[in-house]
Image (tube, rainbow, N blue to C red; front, side):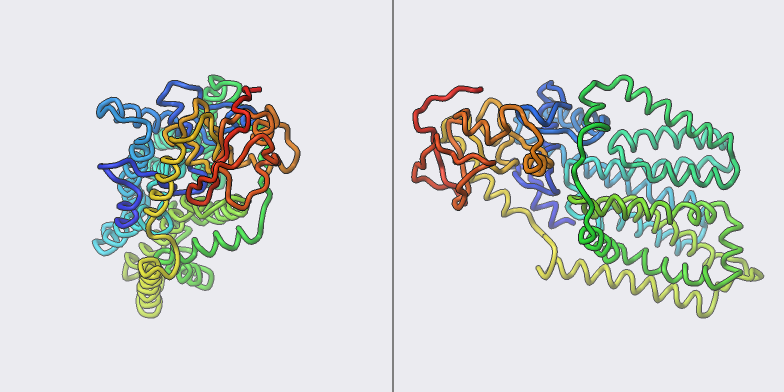
Amino acid sequence: MAIRFNSAISFSVPMHVITSGWEQESLFAMWKYVNGLDIYSSPYEIPYSIAFFNWLFYETYGQFISIIHNIFDLSGDWIPTTGRLFSIVGLLFGTIISYSALLSVTNTKNAFLKAVFFLTAIYLMFGPLIGFWGFTIRSDIWGMVLDILAVYLFWRFYGTRPYTAVVLAAIALFCAWSFKHINVYSAVAIGLYLLFSLRIKLLMTLTFVYFLFVSAALYIGSFEYLETLFFRPAIYGFDLEHLWMNLKNFVVKSAPTLIPLLVMVFVFLFSKNMRREILSREPGKYIVISILPIFAFTVFIASKNGAAENYYFVFSFYVALAAAIFMQVIFESKEDSPVENSGPTRTALVVAMITGWNTASLAVLSVLLGVTGVLSVGGTHERLSQIKSCLSEMPTPVFVPDMYASLPWMNPSDEPIILSWNYRLERSLGVPFQHGGVGGLIDSGYFASLLVPETAEELDGSRMEKYRETGKKCIEFNALVRIDGGGEAP
């Protein structure tokens, strides 16, 4: 993680790197926030960008970036660096909350288990599953942390002040949803637990408070906000290859908790005494009721086109929570308990824990040795810095089919084009865009110059007939300028 941090963040120069898929959308949104512009806009009008995430993501990151920039008088190209720092704050807070949640749910007094839980909390936030996502400007980190916070608050107060527990949990759940509107993992878990426990009044209180806040946000939100969240065509599709790839990555990167859990599930299924002991505890009921629905939901959303293992972040905590509950039963059961907490069961669990950590260590080592994965994004900074230099010498407005290089601090055009992730797919499906999209703008001569991939004969459906090559190259791009020097915005 330290090596990745060093390649993505510098305090001496602004780093131009991409740490997650299509992070450029969020970077552009942060630039708009800092400059007092509307975040939510139609992706079918210039500049064809979209803000996919929920409102609290933009408010918190935007405020943090604005405050830092005002204090240190920073320019726009520092937005990625300052925004990444807020993600790291989320990881640090998430470590504390994850550890607190594991302690609160299990209420363990065992020093060995406390040490294991602390290492688990660190691994959840700084392990290979998070990876570069820990430095990215997206809603995933804080959305996950707030989901975990809801679990902590619920179990911290449930035993003594149940109504306080559900109200505080509902507020945390609303905040998680307000970062990323698919972050309903713990809302489902807590709701199912209360339902199957027949705590109907508590369930109604949780539901009322949660949807009261959600309704208020929707009522206050702009038309474009509602359109983006609920009515924009989400033409993704689902793909079995994505499902398998993301599931495989999750399994390998979650070995320290997943392998011990599998051993304990085996014992749970074939030991009547273990089942009785787990189900006699409220946290045991909670995890048994919730983990399979959360897993099914996670696998489903992680199988859509464009998805990555970030959809497993919250589920990874639930795997750790389940493992913690089982471990407590095995390591802390009283001597007269019928649970098989000694001999083969405990030995198998210890072996599973060692195997899990060794598997994770091998996975990390394979990245360090360059066998798999990405260890550094420093090369991206060098490439994008060269493109920025090229763009500074070209007539504006200039278009380059690289969305990071199109950001306002990279591209000197007054209104650079920042395409949404859906843009190419929707163009291929014939979805109408203002002025015919980028291809239509090129055909009309809107751009004074273009940077075009060397082998490209067309760009977004345009043959670029109003442009000529200059003979200059920029990395993998050829520089083109408008033939007549004319052309106006359509």
